Image 1: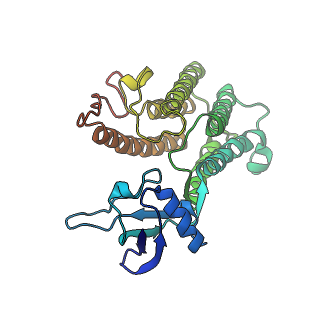
Image 2 (image 1 turned 90 degrees about the vertical axis):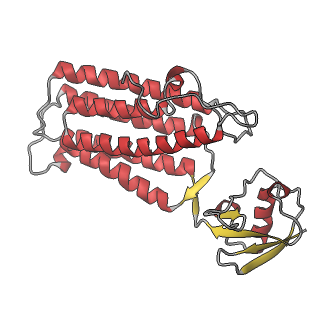
Image 3 (image 1 turned 45 degrees about the vertical axis):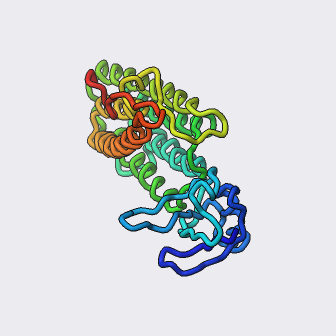
Length: 304
């Protein structure tokens, strides 16, 4: 069949000869063969807007063209998503920065605080803080390549610079004050207790990621309801543990930049959690044989 590819303004870009039973991914490959600038991960196809619709239906790579009612002479709208980069690449670099930047202030105070006399020995709280920070980001890098399964292979390349600016900048900001030669440590026992609990939060976060990783079988892309562990009470248990981990770290070091980092991250993760919760509730509505999403808290259960 002949399928017309148009821009969002309705201008014809290309006309392709495709099998109606072919998956959308085949349409992307054929379009790439004609327009070499737009490799498949950079493409997005949607159905033209119908009266009363605000957003067109995005075509899923794994579904056939006929699934969307497309036949000979049909039209699809093309959008250029811009230059793309792999999720794992972005995650590696955004986590690698804090893993390197934070310890610099701990190990090289002579060069990073040249106007101050470097301490002969760091406080125990500073030592445990750098160990916790390094453990967290080493864990995140390891998870990126061994645990996480990404629903999308790529993201816009701009995200690499935006995410790195956030993580690398906050790492320097927090570390500068926590490892400052004039840093006054809080109560040592309280700090050790907070960091110990924070470590438990990181282990809870790891278990949550393993549960999420095992939700889908190889090749599956459909949404699944996470169950077990804290997921029986909370939609985004992984965010719950992550947020509490950084709040406890901040309580341990008693540093305003650390609290700002924790709060900024908590606000962003809460926003993601709300969006995911709404998506799961909408997907699992109990209709047409689908299970109904159980009542759950979004981020924090009542006992936290």
